[in-house]
Amino acid sequence: MKKLLFILLVSTSVFTFAQQNDKEAYIKKESIGGKLDFTKRIEEKYRNETSISFGKEHFSKKDYAILLWAANVRTAGIESFDQAAKIWEEVNKRNLSAVEKKALKTGFESEF
Image 1 (cartoon, rainbow, N blue to C red):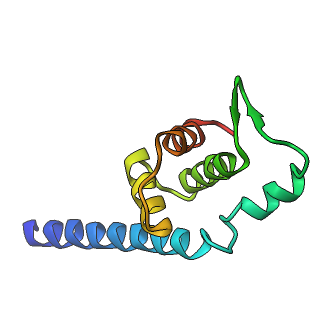
Image 2: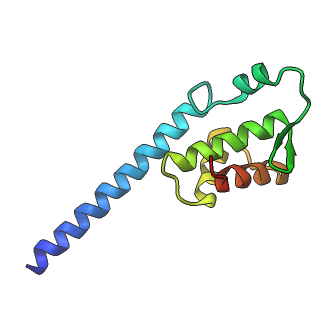
């Protein structure tokens, strides 16, 4: 019985890990030029704007795209802000600036 429970727990952990990897792979694939790349859509919609209001905050178009990306990543199943930031940095091959990190955090914590 203990062996069966152990095998069940291990297989559940492996399945959860595989699902997490699938989520991350999807996010990485779609973040540049895909469904999670909001830069072109924002540029088209807010063509004549220099900043975009979100709540009481104002964001540049670039930072607003990061905000939307973060909200969608959370919806896709990424559960921690740190994990979302890590994925963003891996995709974009650079560290987030302080302003970008604020936009990412705002989007990640927002309810849409």
